[in-house]
Each structure stands twice: as structure tokens, then as C-alpha cells.
Image (spheres, rainbow, N blue to C red):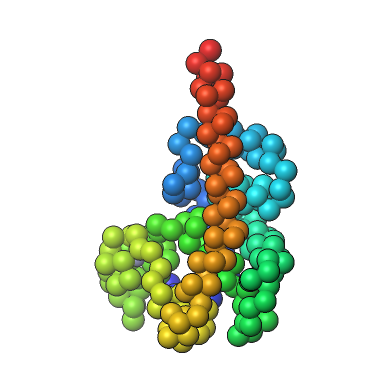
Length: 193
Ligand SMILES: [Zn+2]
């Protein structure tokens, strides 16, 4: 097993996890993926629809398309669109990284949740998560995946990364949470009959 080298690889790992989690972390315990699919059709904004499919309906095959949509939306925002970036695909990679962390923030990205790694033909406990199978990315991981030095990440990009998330996925998720909450009483009534 090799460590992911860039955010695209990280995001692509989501596709392999599809059958391994019943609902996304921080998900919606009262709804099945089929319920979510029905609710998604009520959302007018196409980016929020796509986000809901990937995060809550387990359709992680759309994660790369979602990253592209997120990049396009972010680049139209006044602050983010004016950023001077280190390379052309920077904002796309930043979107991929943010989506990976948002959609599957719990599973260790180094061992992919198996707690072990193969090092020099020996199976050893994964150092990244200490065998817990769970680990959030650290700033040093984000800097490595984005191929930038850690001080550059801490100085400039840590705050901008939060800005990007705040203007996209946090807003999208907030709208979906309200939609789920609005629908819940109706959903319970139907299931009770
Ligand atoms: Zn691990």
C-alpha cells in the first residue's frame, strides 16, 4: 500500500469505500439512501444536489465531478476568485482535499482503515493512526498532498482552505440539514402508518 500522493488520489479512494459505510459520518440516521435520493430531487441548486448524492446517498462515483463543480463555483466568488495560486490546478486540488475530508473524515487515509501497512514485505501497525483505523489529516498531510511546504500552508493556505469550505460545502451542508429536518416529521408519519 502506498500513501496517496495528491488530493486526486485521496478523493479516488472514496470510490473504493462505497460498501464499507452505511451512512456518511455525521450523516442522517433516519433516512435510507433511497429516502435521500427522493429528497435530493427537491433541491434546485445542481451543486448541492451533486454534493448530497456523494455525501448522503453513497454515490461517491460522482466525487470527482463534484470537485470540478466546486472549483468552478469557488472561482466565481469575489475573494476566492482573486487568489494568486501556486499552480493552475490548485483550486481543483484544494476542492478535492476539502471534499475528501468532509465526506470521509474518519477513516485513516494512509492505511485506509485496515490499521496495518506493508513495509519492506512486513505487515506493521499503521503509524499514521497508531492502529486505531481512524485519523484526521494534519496540516503536514495537507501540505504534502498539495505539494507545498508546511510553512506556506500554515501561513497562507490554512485560512484560505477554511474560507473555501465556508463558502461552499458548509453552506451546501447547512441547506441540506434544514431540508432533512423539515422533511423528518413527514417521513416519520409515513413510516408509522
Ligand atoms: Zn492508519
